[in-house]
Length: 287
Image (cartoon, rainbow, N blue to C red):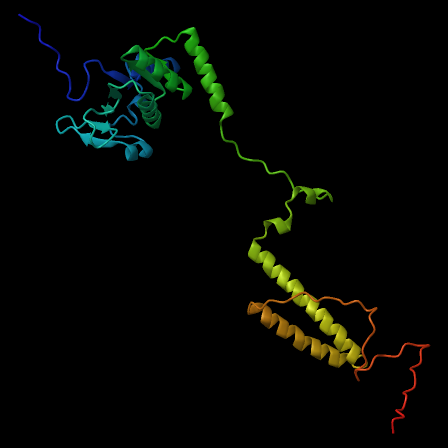
């Protein structure tokens, strides 16, 4: 009579890879630390029972995987896509089962083990899976039983740990601001940080100030004996300029002309230079 074939759960391969909570190792450590518990016949540490319920996974994984629950056993299965026929892994509470040897799946299973507070895990399955699970779990600080690493495995674990410590994120330490005169050299030029519109506004404001200076020069020359009148006129001029600036009016920078050119008298006649006399007008003798 032919032997009966073992029944394989639907969606799983004949040989399953597992990461399980190593209750035996944890209870043994607890017995060594508490001999009285051993005398009373307590072989399992009560802390082993923590976070053993199926479905307790990190929120990041819950959002990434699609899940279904077996209506008979109540065990959830997690799929990488909505159309996937075979689950990435199944959750039996204290044991996580997968037919995959993917590094990504292994990382997720170890993340679940850490999330549930497992400090000791037992791995079973193919050598490829057990090696990957040992490497990832050891990197995360878990004790692993079920795989005996080779010398090269230990070397790779050492390199992975060094890379992880080198790529760790540490809080940045901001150096105190220097109060020496040379500190301005390290700071970018303020004008280079301004946008073109800001530069245009600054340039227009400078042009308006140059026009006000010209107006003040003319007013002081005309009202030199009345400072109060000069102040009133300049206040009105300044208010006008500010109103134009707020309205977006554009000013042109005042230009100073060469004062060596001969000035023109109010009557329109050229001013006579000292030491030079005009020639007398000649009368016509035609009449």
